[in-house]
Image 1: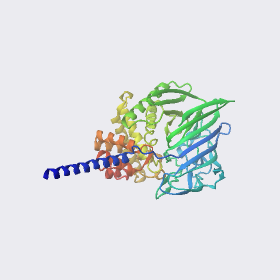
Image 2: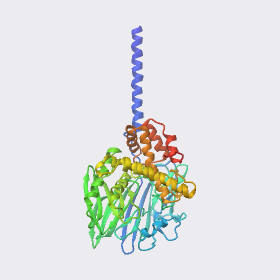
Image 3: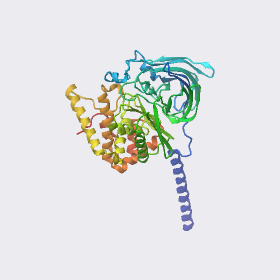
Image 4: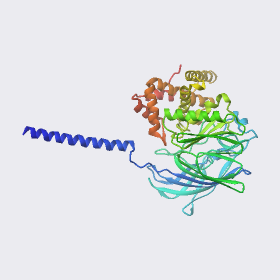
Length: 501
């Protein structure tokens, strides 16, 4: 009898154990997202015409908005970034110190005009709002509940300023960044994020979406874009190019009649470097791009797209990141060229794939992109840069900034996590987001050790690919990956409490 009872107990325990294993597997599959459908993304379909005489980009934009939020919507807000370039705008697109370089032919203006909005054959009510006419409010045809979608079309014309900027035309390139209406981010409990454009930093924040873009332009121009070219045809001096972009958070294009192209297939990615006609360093620049892509693939995780375009352009700042495309200013010296290219390519991981609110938490992508650049040189010693010396130079630069600003103004705000508009000067912005951000990530690495630090970076990239992070989610991710409670340590840096010696 005892043996029978014992066998029954063993059988019962085995059944419970097997059931527990099954439940654990189910929970694991749910948590890791295996065999689950991906979240459907909103889509932007654009049919555009570029008029080189008028310097306008006009056409229609069909947006299919998919409600992946917990709220119901009866209207949407969209950014009208080109209106930051209009006459009378209160938000400056460049600082006073940069005006002469930004406007080599004198002050110039641009804007965006919305001609109409329609959905399912009906005209929709819309209004242009905001301090700088920077927000488009669209009243939707019906209520859109969670997991539902609605499609509407916007007819618009963007006029370009003669300015060496993300959006504008210069002597060699026509830069088409942030040229179209794009849906404002929505945060539960906070509403739509409608921050103004700002001369400091990159005032952008968006969800990943799918893009289909067709553009007509003069056939003597070459087009670089965030999209993968599907087909292109030329007729009567006009070229029509059709492109797609999958799971990207923005779409940028650059036109030029002075491009010289070098390209190379690296794994699953085609790298394209667009220099100017007559440039003798195309192969050198292409090699930098290849080395950066391979290094970051190894350190962080695979670049998920089939192409990467690095484009020399008329641009007031050193460089600018867009999904699958980065701008490199033609004013960058040969000594700084590798650094700028690598930094902007690093943004493909930090901002492009792992997104964040660049307006309010710029250090999240800029600081990590800057430290990633240090990691590149650490892992590519043939470039002749000593990564330890670079960190030491950054430390001295930051300390000099604090000392000078304190002596001049009596105090200095060294907090990192604040809106772009709260940085009083560009040096303050650069030192508190780029330089101090670099030092923060190096300090984290020093605290947890190399093994846990690089494990944390890879898991952070994997967990938040195609999503947006906040300082809180970043800290939680690193805490989980390293096994350390880093919150107080990181917050002391962000709040300006840490003393850096």
